[in-house]
Amino acid sequence: MSQIRQLNKAVRSTLALWLLTALIYPLFMLVCGQIALPFHANGSLITNTQGQVIGSVLIGQPFNSERYFWSRPSTVDYSTNPKVPMTGVSGASNLAPGNPELLKRIQVEIAQLRQANIQPTADLVYASGSGLDPHISIAAVQAQVQRIATTRKINPSQIQSLIAKNTDGRFLGIFGEPGVNVLKLNLALDTLQPNL
Image 1 (cartoon, one colour):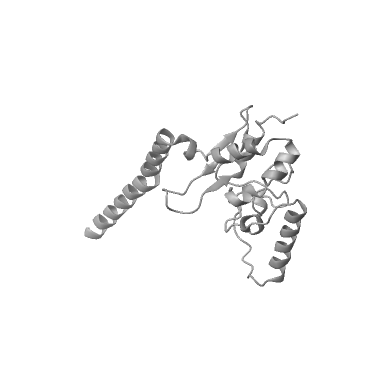
Image 2: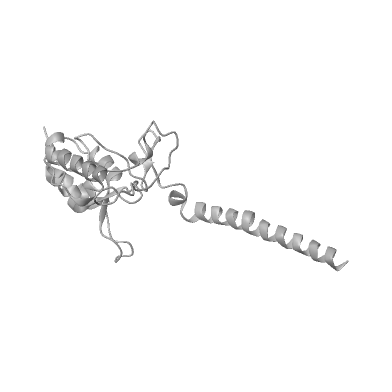
């Protein structure tokens, strides 16, 4: 009889723990996130003036137009490759520094930047570890200011003020380096009127 009682106790304990950890706790965290930080809890999504989602503050996007700041390269094409049916793919190439394939990719990036008259910086040449980084360094942004000012016929000082507004500081004031979210900066660029 004691074995049946022990088995019954084990099953009840398992069910109680499952109920607590698989249902109650996740629902509690979901409700807390929706109340305290709804923007963050819902993916930090950015919408356009029509209310359509155009991206997330947390995930980079490729920009190739001369009218926009370019993001850093991505080994996973920021999960936008139509040949790959899944989204949310992240990761680095895992190629060694001396790998000919990596060296060729870097040389192509440098040639494209020089052709656009942009001084290559590390984050405009090398992909991030996740392949989804939405930020570039202030140096990478500054290297592109003249190209965008010329293309859009905008005074570079207007662009500089946008850069200052869209620069994220160090995490907790001490960790990492300041960076600029490319998507947010490019959206702000579209609000500027050209100097005619």
